[in-house]
Length: 281
Image 1 (cartoon, rainbow, N blue to C red):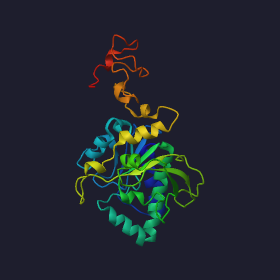
Image 2: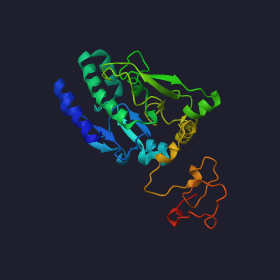
Image 3: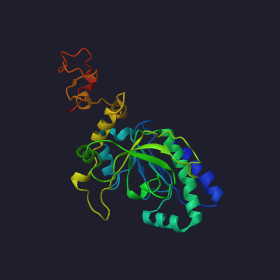
Image 4: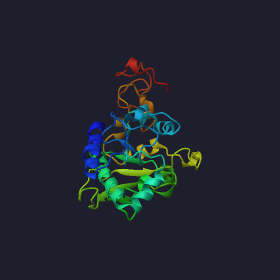
């Protein structure tokens, strides 16, 4: 499902059914890697009533996200759970709790957002703020209805992965709700999910010890899989430094071979490709 199709569902199905005409905004990355990483926000605020590309969003709100994603940014997915434009997210949550008609409207919008996420099948979901957590199934308000299980890792490793914020957990199923159209199965079974605190705002800058290290999380997930998932997350249109991508940090720095520990220079490497020499490492 592309962004135009999703916006059509929002406008021509939900708003027509609810007889509502309101500003809607949608931010996605058309280059998002299926089965990759998905950043999830609550709702758009700074952009206008239109469809925007995540990679072209730059401001003091967006720039920390791009920096956090690093080498994975180009193929990282992005979606806001609700397309409702409002700079004050608390207003939306309060209105949802108090207004049944608005709650129904948000539920119908969220159903199509969930469809988009299910089709993208992300391996890792990063929730941008606590208000967005409200809709996943963590609270008594089930909304999308996902269920979760803890990850069995030692406390020291856990603190390195989730930085003491929301714990890194795994989706393990789904409970039928109106929002998920009473589904009993999900494409996200096994998906890892973690939350983080955004830069700026009333709380100020994030201390270094609380910033997520996406690379560490990716490497942890990669270690649990039977294929090299991390390699799919890079932008394949530009050369990547295999040394950085080598799990043993001994890979060939001149080619894109299988990280042979004995291949350290271009003279020794049978797969040397000169177009990778731009690697700064």
